[in-house]
Length: 592
Image 1 (cartoon, rainbow, N blue to C red):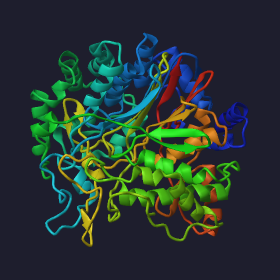
Image 2: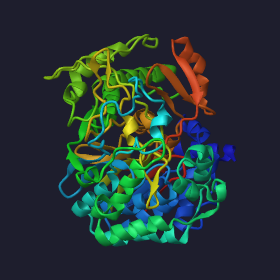
Image 3: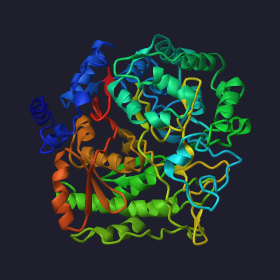
Image 4: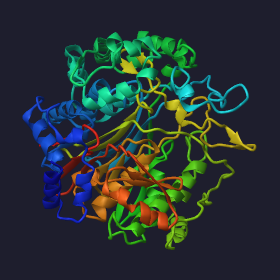
């Protein structure tokens, strides 16, 4: 089977890199049995992904992490709905069938291109810290940081969810379909039940001990004391009731009334690790519209989400530093990997010191993306060996830059949605509950986030404050990188991925693959990963890139072979729409 997929990729891509894409295809994605009963177009999309082929369309396209969710969004677009309408249907379905990654209990960032006006903007639905939170929220009595999962599991880690408010805001501004109608597909499937996917079953089994910390969560994911099995039908009546309430009363019903009271009671009543979330915290949450942050790369404008996300800044810094270097030798060339890896390390050094919620901390966004500053940083890449040491730069800024380096831990989970509608509107949304299964607390059929553990557990080092420390009402720094790439004022690529702080590297590689290496979206999504954030080069185990270990070691890198489970969902926009879904996960691209 692998030889067949390899041959198909070579014929399709016509590049020397297609073999690498075939190597990355996961066994679970190669089969179509789990979802082919949904419809003929879903079956065709699954087969195209398994063969390494991009899906093509003329009018609209949606790419997301589960065929049930993609089908829900596709039905909306086929009925004349906008990308904003489709986002509502896709996200509410993902919260049911991929609950470990995102949902109503989490937050999201959206980059939006409005075809009518030609304007690009972003919406911040990131969770906020409760008003009762202090900088010592994740420290013990001696001021030392808690262990990560001691902080995660329970109520202490739960921030105010932003996803319901974000969906409602964008739907009100850009949607044309009835709100209740968009929630109906997920509501019906929650009532009827859905077959547990192999991926969800495996993740539940792997996390069984932590899921057992909450009786409600354990009862849902481990009925009878055993983890749900692949193919088992899972019914979620509480989620159906939550959606019914939101259908009738709007998203405001999430932030006030009985549901809000239940959320607060669950967080504050969590055994052994209660949190400080209050009804006031929910009532005052607001989505924030922010200007897109853009950087230049190969005559394109790569645009995304600014603070509190570090995504667009770090991605822009990487690509800005690489803009003056020739990467055409491709992903198997050790010097290309050196350039990309050290550009990433330099960007992460700046990220760790300067980036946090800009409503609380002045962030030198313009200085960090200034062309002269990046040109100076790029000079550090001119050698032949790995940089022996990487430190933050000093970007131009009119505020103090005396910050200590961050120590936040950001583990991979999350989900990404890319949509282009028939009118040309574009949505790139990355959505999350942070760690897999979030806080492990369940309310109303959905999981609550553990987003507050994206803050630094330490508030200062040697008396110097850390920008990403916990503060009341503050939004934790993120690496989510929903991206729209523009050229001559029009969108040409839509990109994004889950994966913790490796999201930045995954997204950067996909953009380089499509622009510099001429790859189709599906080939770019399947390309093996090599990511370097802090000095050690992570190489995707079991792929051709693992063979670069000796060459990278010879120029000074430590290497580590490991699973690098991205979830890239890509769309290329030119005469036609071409979409690709990461073979490491269950998603597909659908279009018409």
